[in-house]
Length: 440
Ligand code: GUN
Ligand code: ZN
Image (cartoon, rainbow, N blue to C red; front, side, top):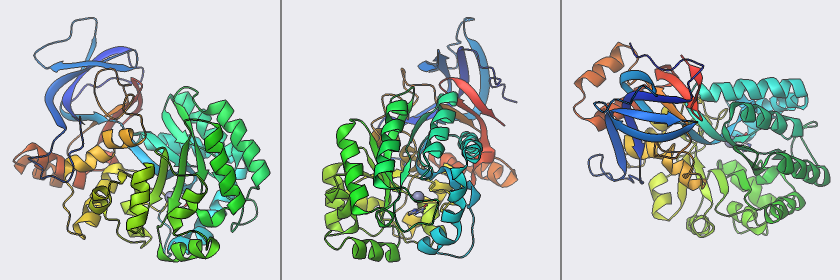
């Protein structure tokens, strides 16, 4: 039995396990020719003062100044990064029977109105962040609700956990029910207050968060663009081109724009800190615009399958120079597990003739996502100097997975089986800045 650290983690400790992370993008190359894969079996990971300070082979035993914990055969990976997820939507996950626009009106909007209540918002933020950690996710780009207090609660709870989190109050001033709309003046005031209080505090960053073009007036989009100008280093977070009816509606509302994506471009919202969920129904000009502005797509395969939205072509997007990360998009997505999400990504790509390796998949929720967010100096790998955000995983849970791993012939086969069969039940421990914040 492994003996991993207890809740009260010592500040200086060494953990023995198989270490897996990436030094570069493995791309869509075959598993055995993929660059950038760093698999270090049976190595010590050294953590001191919340940071990774080194790694060494098992025979090189850390001296007695290190608390030592051994988990032979288990896997340590960087904490996962969920590049698009909705904190209030644990309440609507797995809702039956609708496509995007109906799903929003039937389930999601009514449920989000509850977040006007500050106590509801605090409890929701707490539940959500603890759930992320219980799925091995240590960083996320999060959409709360339109309510300032909901964003505030999320920032405060993430701050308490010392998590690297990106979020911001949702902007929506039309086409939403009472209690779920703001207006330009109040929204601008709320955003400025939140930015000044939280952006750059500890490990928190603010994202100007336009829900999607149909729920903002042109004036509100302009205001969002001005915020990005006024405060350097903000992120921008929204949805684009997820569903065909949504695309049609967005074009009707903004007839002057060349495309749905162009609505955001015209408002000055696209840059290298832009995160746009989905991007299924984009054309070549849109892809060129993403490439030129540096904004990224948060590919959300579980959500795209569940809501029947369509199949995102990851390889084609990358061929066009678009940066892509992976996201759960709960509650359109049906699990916070990025393992399950990646298993869905494999199937979505397979339907389009591309084979997603375990390496490319896991890169997309670790170093790839960190690079796309400009955070690879801090998170996304097990390199020396990175903040010690990582998770310890059992490769197999249950007899079927155990058997599959037993007969696997090489490390890619093992990791691919883990990724395809695994979920949060495989998670043993999650560490944030060197502290164990989740244990099974
Ligand atoms: N587009 C606008 N809002 C949402 C949302 O909450 N979920 C998804 N999947 N798409 C959206
Ligand atoms: Zn979403």
